Length: 100
Image (cartoon, rainbow, N blue to C red; front, top):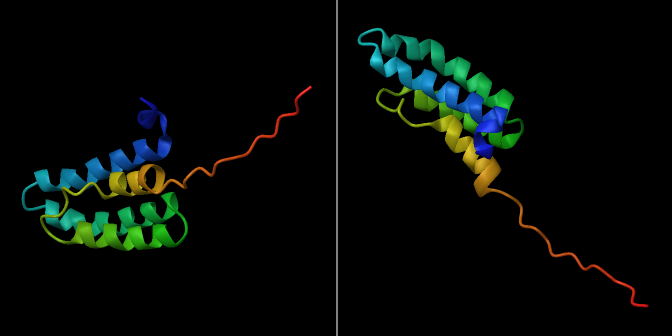
C-alpha cells in the first residue's frame, strides 16, 4: 500500500501510538502527557510547515494535555487532511495535435 511507504505517514503513526500509550500507564500516564504534549506539538510543526502546521501543533498540544483525548489520532488526521482530502483539483489541459 502506498500510504505505508510514505515517511511522514509512518512517523505520524508512531507519534500517535506514543501519545496513546500514555493512557495504558495508570497514575503516571497523565504526568507523561505533560512532557509529551510540547514534544508532539513541536514535531507536528516540523512535519507540516506553514499556517496549517502551526494550527495543527496547537490542536495536538491541547489534545495531548486534556485527559481522555489521547485516543484521537491527530497526526494521522493531519496527514489525511494534507495529502488526501485537500488535494488541489487537476485542471484540464488542452493538447493541440497537428494533423498531416
